[in-house]
Amino acid sequence: MTSTNARTVANVVLASAGAAAVYVVMTTPSLRRLALQGLRIWLGASVPGYLFEQTRQAWTESGRALT
Image (cartoon, rainbow, N blue to C red):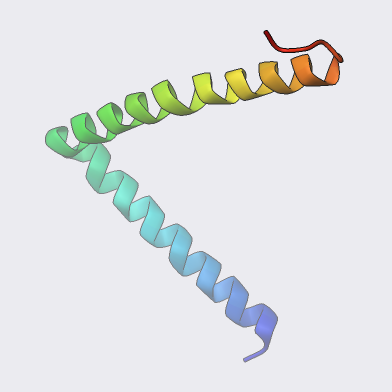
């Protein structure tokens, strides 16, 4: 088996496992609620942090001093 074939097989196996996990989570109400709550928490923390960092970087690049 070549390296390319091994990568392809590994990618197919990972994609299949991911699809199976998504199916189980979406068809089980308690897991679906848990996943959606985790998504809300992750988005609630990462998006504002990203926006803050972009604003800070733009402010720094503008040459103005932070007060």
